[in-house]
Length: 393
Ligand SMILES: *Cc1c(COP(=O)(O)O)cnc(C)c1O
Image 1 (cartoon, rainbow, N blue to C red):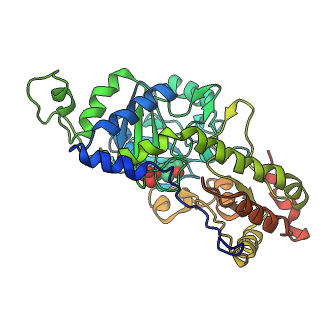
Image 2 (cartoon, protein in one colour; image 1 turned 180 degrees about the vertical axis):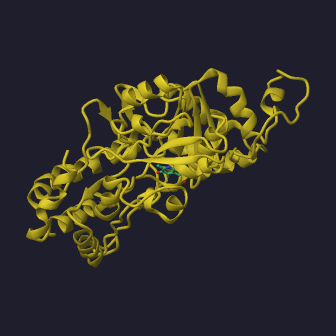
Image 3 (cartoon, rainbow, N blue to C red; image 1 turned 90 degrees about the horizontal axis):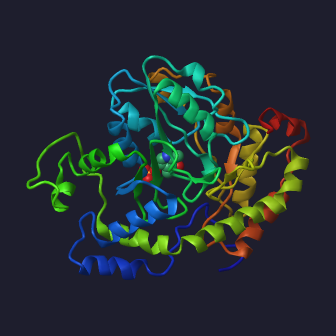
């Protein structure tokens, strides 16, 4: 590749065995759900992440929708969600009739602010949904304590945090339920896919039923019941074994994928720290008790204008850097659901100021140096430099 070819924000990367396993999945004559590869993936997550029961789903979005059904979320229930997240975190519960209660995020990790949760709890609150932004753990001890005190479910949206840990425990294994995403943009991918991680034994059987169109088909195939029928709510949340075969090829190489991402992430951190300090730019904050997933590397610029200049500066050199969420409390749908502009000031600042650098499994050293050099050549206007201070850790 020539040194001037564009550097994308993300490039889905194969490990080499994907097509072989996909072909094998087809030849096994079991291309529907819960075949050989699906079962391998389930055992992998249960063992590696310490999960009671893992179930592959067609997406993380669908895993969150299953979680909302499993928590019996009903019309008028309240669900506490971070404002700085993807729509699926909230939609899953709104689809069951819940009212989202937007909570701002912490200025350091950009995660659900555990110090602001309790004042949002009412008699209608049913679930807290911590999102491990960038695969850096939320303050789970505080969140679990509040949940326990008020009898609330905790559903970890761990779309970005596969293999991340909080005080030694795998993300997704800490709440009642957790989710994973295997969307093309995530660390481990199969195009579109996800998983529901179930940490409560009493939820396992119902989860299987919900995933199989409301039937007890899974129990029937295990010989636990002599016929199967319609026993609960449900939908078709299970992916084809062909997708699981793709996923399995990636999971087999999880260590090399994670160490490659770690190398790139640390390369950015080491080479940009001084520049960031001089320019008034904030880099990610990783608390000492957290092992992150190296999902993304972000910068927080002092203002929307500087961010726009920064993105344009990189684009001129063929480098695609992108911003992230628009705060949900002040989004068109968030406003319809009771959100207010100004309600989550940190999330709203991040909507304007955060930018993500290219980071993908197949990124070459040369590509990364082009990005680093381009970033180092950017100068924040001196009148703007002091402005990120309110987001300093
Ligand atoms: C990617 C992502 C999702 C959605 O994942 P899909 O598998 O695409 O449905 C949900 N929540 C967060 C925080 C995400 O980053």
